[in-house]
Image 1 (tube, rainbow over the protein chains, first blue to last red):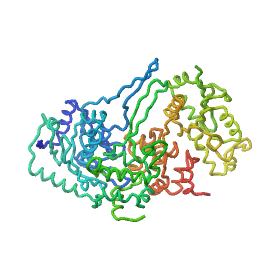
Image 2: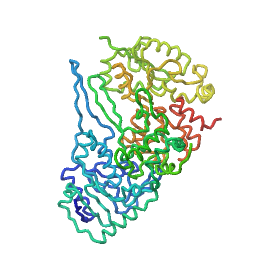
Image 3: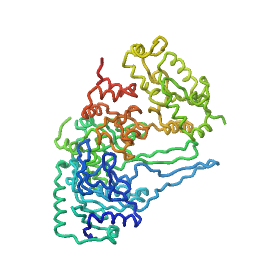
Image 4: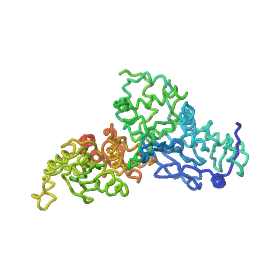
Length: 368
Length: 258
């Protein structure tokens, strides 16, 4: 579908948000909280992190206020879209025991209203596509994810200020959105270029005081794209997919494991990681129980526990599992690498392990 | 039907874990319908030598008469569960294990002769077989209920041993170490509290004890990177659960001794 492309003034941003809310969307957007930017209910553009800019480094994140008028002059915080599609913890079904002793089961489908996320970045949009493959496009469709996905409209924002930890340009996923969003904003000094590429996206523009995009505005957007593509961090230029699997006994795994806390933070903030565990919680009276699933990680012991044996008891094995899955076997499962270059695993690793460095370790073959 | 009997015993402790029981609220009434609570001094019933199906023990072994009492409780119980840091690792009072206990007693008490205290505060498992450990200072109500419920079903409860970080991220609690340079113990501490401290902007201080596969050296190195001197880093590990092996060993490596 050919995208509709217009410009609207920053002064009309609230009016647009009001019309989205009025049309029944639960709007979710980025906002400042606890020293970072997280996504939550959005009612007013004053909630957006206007003027904020971030400094990110391995294991380190801080924000400063530049008092600029820009709403989106920052790179991603720890989470964006993933928690709104793949819930961190949710019930799947519940069971009851009757007085006669019979047990009945009920599905507990989430009650979802139409939801609109404003501010998703190119990396997140690419990650949605990957999670869609996992949850929706296999033999068994996940009804819990599907309920949320069917109700989600994504208004993305092209990235103008990637963090030092970002490397989306080298994975080919950013900094500008390629496809997968319903509408995409590019923020300029006076307002936004908006491109709507789906039917749902085009409907979001109805009733808006839109202007034609000028050549000058398009040039400004292009300049932002070129500057934002100029990222210091990148994945090394070798056949990562093939090489990692030939290096399973490389000493580097143990060197990384000396530093790795096996805390799971990298996988929890990763927008494509989808692992989960399931457990039952009984009511104290023993008459009913609820079956939950929650985010799990290949860095936990339970992740590789099978019939009394923990397959990956060592941290080196867990890190190897993560990296080889993300960059190697992912290709076989989903036709691409599982990394979208968002850099979250670098910033939010408490000890600052840099995934691009880890991958680079294996560029030179080192014998054990 | 005869209801299973439960006893709640206290050793050296602050009573906070027993309070976790009393604070159960409505579930305590449900529990009282399911089991016979025969000994629970904090709440009323006293029958310390009763034979029970489940004995819950709060507190550490700290005085000479504790050991004999503990052995009797073990002999009278089918399942013995430690509740909280004191019973499970020796608790905050195990800090004296690294000091001259008698010197401390002389420094603190006006009449040291009346104090009957062992040199070390030790975990219950150092003295008798323990069937299940519930960590925390104090234990969480949720874990206590889950444990009793599981035992009533005739199974052992699921052990929670992942790192606190997992819970923080599930709750979208922002990492206090990455954003605020706090020397948080969450990455080596087992979950169960629901990541309480980081959710109010505080660093975890490890009250749930070591998580599975805790890389304490890597975290200690990071603490030094955040500007802590070695002794400060040691004190992060030698605190509520200084008696837990993994924390003790890391702390001993870094501690300044007199």
